[in-house]
Image (cartoon, rainbow, N blue to C red; front, side, top):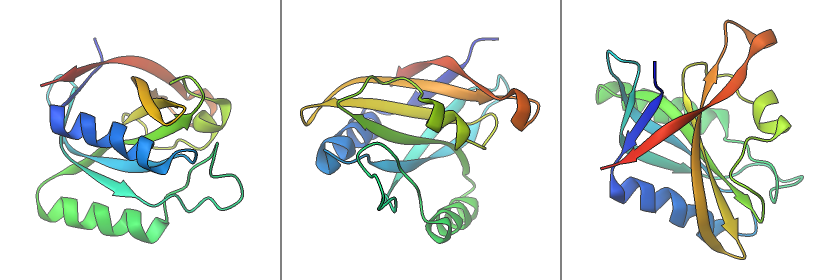
Length: 147
């Protein structure tokens, strides 16, 4: 089964721009939409969040749990699910770090990472968190389709 994340050109540009706006710190946000019958995820909107990680915001991110609960509640009211998350890697590749894996817990969701080099968004990659539980979790590269 091929992994796929679909999002609009507008949402794709917005999450990349968010990384440029917060540079040299990491940006973060939530991807809202639907899971289809093939397991593909279609994003219908993004919810930019504030990075609450005061200790090292240049290479870590955290979303306030209260903000996440509010976003999830509002999404459910619109018939949407949380299908993933996004964040930026200032002056680092758009690849999952050991910290990204350790702090990821939403199995089946997408984790989109944009590399922001010297303030300019470059590569954006998406990964699905796959696992039967915490002990065997891993990120699998997934295709991103911008429509």
